[in-house]
Length: 72
Image 1 (cartoon, rainbow, N blue to C red):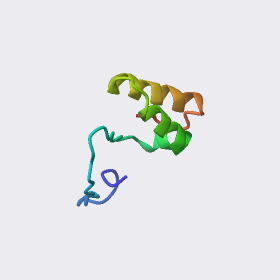
Image 2 (tube, rainbow, N blue to C red):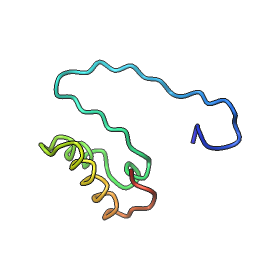
Image 3 (cartoon, rainbow, N blue to C red):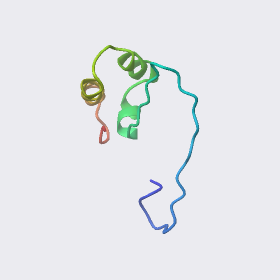
Image 4 (cartoon, one colour):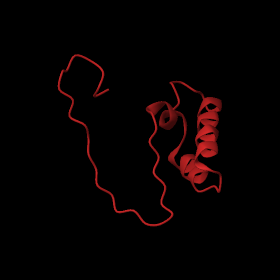
């Protein structure tokens, strides 16, 4: 919502993380995280599926759990 609305100046959130080999980052809309529990997302991210397949499976899972918002 920071980029949508009446404000002309957008101040993005910035984070710095220390990553280790094998770590996985997920950038997702709230449509994904609203319908899936963190444990379900974590379990899927730990699966050996390639990233593209993993993303599709997460979206499918969120849609089956209710799909109350756009899942991306």
